Length: 312
Image: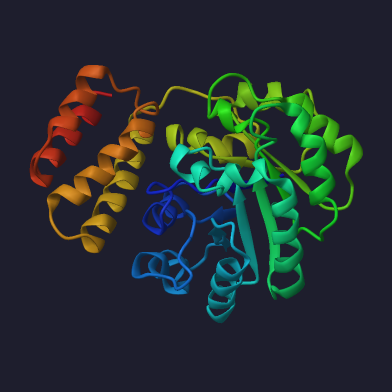
């Protein structure tokens, strides 16, 4: 089974990816947070730079509804040595959708087909797609699937939710199963709500055999999850050695952002954003999280983290 790490804007950056592979691993392919500028900016170049992604299998993701933008970014990626690119048709954010990008592009399937026709004709890289199953109704998936199957996709990563559902409710696993039964022209990857061994079993038991899955929030909440799923090891409460390893992982991320950013506040903002997900692994209380959120300086933050994790 292949395990992918989902792209999460501001979260699964090259700093996080490098720390993750050194301390945990188990991920076979990493997808970058989306690129959207026709001419890659400094931040985007940092993300895709081969120097920052050594020993990682990385696929850059593009967010756009303009073929000329997609092709310009793809050409730059090819110059950096990339051979595959991913198209984001899954982001449910209101600001993204309002511009008919991400999942919003699904609302105009005819325009999407014209876009795909052009990029598959002119792009020198292999193209995969990460998609939702529609905007407002699962009935939309029929037409979208008809569009996708016309093109030689590297793979289709399906998050079986509608845009309007964001990350709420239960994924429409039956839609993924139907797609498995009807589509054999390119590989399918399942994405959505696999956050534990139990949830993995619940999803895969209702599907035909799945040889690739994408994890997002589940990895952030439990960095051991990819190895647990591959080894079929039972989940357990982290012990003292596990917390020590987690602290080393955390410290490498912190130092990575300190090297990248200027000043305490940008670094602390990024770390606090991560803790919204990471808190589940050491099972931090609301009181402990409040302490972390209130920190104003890195030295203060370090002291709080040492105390908080020392109590776990």
